[in-house]
Length: 399
Image (cartoon, rainbow, N blue to C red; front, side):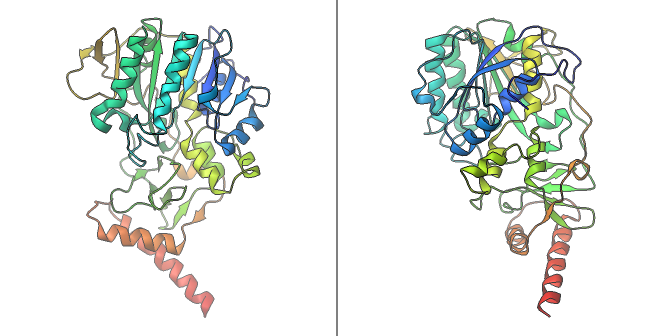
């Protein structure tokens, strides 16, 4: 699929009224731009420094200019309507460095402000992790809001769960929109609301982080937890899934790509310049394509129809808000702008999963037994059964 391919209508049955021209910074493997293209918009420039991600972008977007360093990007192409920037989350992520928005990676958002000052795009779209709302008492959001208000932009943001689009991945991301059109950010992000989702509290399968076990599990019924670009054991890795037969498996990289809304083997070109583990890192750092298709359709067809009564923000940053010229309002909306039928993870998987190794299983159980974490009924016994099965198979082979 190419950058400028678009469908006539999306999941909401509407079509974009206007083709917007996009410049994408910190493009990763192109999830933002691919989603916006599905909504009928056209990307004119990509910027990405990571060699493995650049190989993927070159493979799928061969006709687009691709700049390698945002710090040396002199300006945007003429006529750009929307500047997008999924700026690095490593310093903002709970699983990352947590140095804050002034960290060496996340601080690159200052380059976004430089380009905004220079080229004045009508709309700016940022994306990052929800932990930024809490880290350092929400300083990252304070910096963003102050910076755009000082430049005369109205703004809105919303935390969205990828499961809203029927994808069995419990992934929450903050989408932030700033615009010179005062009404546009809130109308784009806050009109659609499916309410609190009816998600399974039990299921045939349970996704979890096998790399954790001391501080958290990330359990998700009939889904996997957030795909991550790294882990506490220092390697990019898939989550695990405890199946009904008490086996523990990890999904194939091609299904991980599909869990982000990409075609299978979307990141295959990364192997031309990087090791195999880079594909997991790229997928974990990507955005869910379906989320930005929804953003793109809402951006082209904004509706100022809200189901909530705005309230002034008096405490920490909420999960959704909007404002302009110093006025900041809480938006009481859910994490689910839509609620597409959720496909259970075991039905979603298209490629044979891989059994979790004995070493990985034993390490996870050791960490879990030393922790005080609560687990779902039968969870520990299921993982123990998987380990016993591996031990039995190993003894038969030795014998």
